[in-house]
Amino acid sequence: MESWAGHEVPRLPGRGEPLALYDSARQGVHPSEPADAASMYVCGITPYDATHLGHAATMITFDLVQRMWRDSGRPVRYVQNVTDIDDPLLERAARDGEDWVVLAMRETALFREDMEALRIIPPAHYVGAVESIPDIADKVEVLLKDGAAYRLDDGTGDVYFDISATPRFGYESNLTREQMLEIFPERGGDPDRAGKRDPLDPLLWRGAREGEPSWPGGDLGPGRPGWHIECAVIALNLLGDRIDVQGGGNDLLFPHHEASAAHAERLTGQAPFAEHYVHAGMIGLDGEKMSKSRGNLVFVSRLRADKVDPMAIRLALISGHYRSDRTWTDELLTAAHERLDRWRRAAAAPAGPSGAELLAEVRARLADDLDTPGALAAADRWAEATLSGATDDPEAPALFANTMDALLGVRL
Ligand code: 5CA
Ligand code: ZN
Image 1: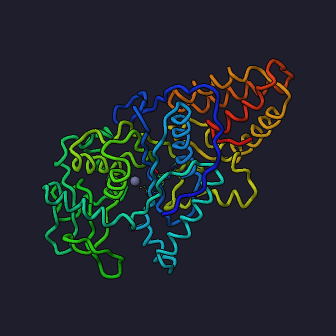
Image 2: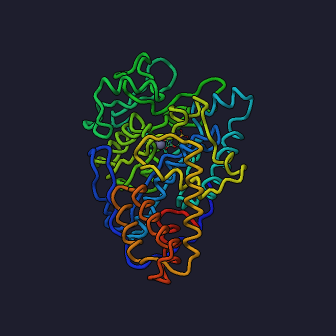
């Protein structure tokens, strides 16, 4: 599937510090120091509605990871998926009397436009579930032959993963079984399905149903893939057996990333699948998580149509720490516009306080688990001193602008 267009990222003097990130599995901040190229897989959209600010915040978070790795001299291999076949997509298309393929194509195209406007560096591979179906079916067959999966004997052709096939199930989310059982049905799981060995076993392959799209699955029979195996297979195929970062919003902590890791680890015999499982907080509106099912959405495309500067959207979203669940407000956007205006005036000044010190401070803040509030505070202090007439360094305004562009993705 086509990705979106990238842009020039300015090169900064010297080298950035190694990045440390919070890993949900180890429940702590640990250095991410890939030996060679860094690899990252981020869970992308299910394209049944337009990109909202929650999606944008998550994509910006992983864009910052990529920027920090690049700044510390590491090439980055970045893959993102599009869940372009799944129940929510089919349900929305049916509700609106629309062809599900047309719906998915339209919303994916809009997402690409939004990503470009927000200056998100594109993934090298932007991959749909549909185009990956032959690979996914192959891997489900491997799991079946290996005894890690089983077919229900109710004639549906549905295949499930046996979570007892991986001794580590639960290590990624650190949830108790009771917690898992509570969350599982809220996030697409079917604990009460008759014939499953364990209520938490996730679906790998859904046999063809009347009125639903299906694809040939070889020995599996016609059907379509489950959700978690989609991400496991796309990541394994394009990034190898072990990746540096598995990313997404914290709504994917369980079961999605737990199950994806379990599938990948059983397929490769290697654990952990990801060095870091990184989860961005949920963006909410009026005290509730922004989600398609709740309908409390602010769309990036709506703001763009209202001529809101995408750089202000970016600044508003990173004014809070990526891991905290936070609320979107109009005041947040107003403050971001004011900050952008101050920074732009400061970047146009003839001189300012030391640019090298500013760069070092921003690098240090971001290297510490993407402390964007700290980085923004450092930039604010520099801009304020500049606007108050500091004249130490004539190179500083240009370096300030390049720093904000390269590390925060905010073009002044
Ligand atoms: N296609 C799957 C992932 S494989 C999916 O979760 N799609 S999604 O459209 O629901 O979300 C796309 C990405 O945005 C995921 O990483 C998800 O965790 C994240 N996300 C969804 N809602 C929010 C929100 N309110 N705030 C922050 N991130 C969110
Ligand atoms: Zn995913």
